[in-house]
Image 1 (cartoon, helix red, strand yellow):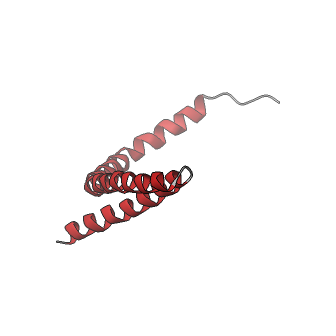
Image 2 (tube, rainbow, N blue to C red; image 1 turned 135 degrees about the vertical axis):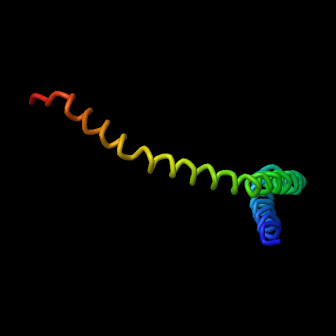
Image 3 (cartoon, rainbow, N blue to C red; image 1 turned 180 degrees about the vertical axis):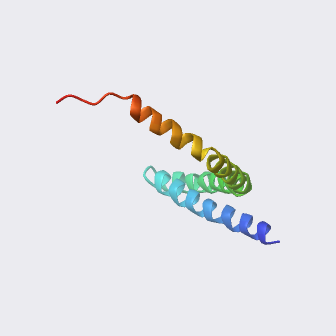
Amino acid sequence: MRERISRVVNRAKYAAVGGAIGGAIGGLFSRGAASTGASVGAFVGAIVGEKWATAAPVVKRAKSKADDEWTVAAPFVEKAKSTAREKVPARRS
């Protein structure tokens, strides 16, 4: 239930922002274009909000998995960095 509510709120938030941006851009041309721009912006914002809300758990899992892989590889990365520093000759001034 909580996930569903957060998805609805996220979609509404992006729809409001999209409608405001679309209305502002359309308002530069005419009153009718402002109305059309607001409706198109709200529609696009709702779609973006829906996609981002459903992608958030996937991104979170991917980040945690990447963090886990980096913690396992950390000793090897540090060793590679130290050997790379040893191989680089000192700069002459």
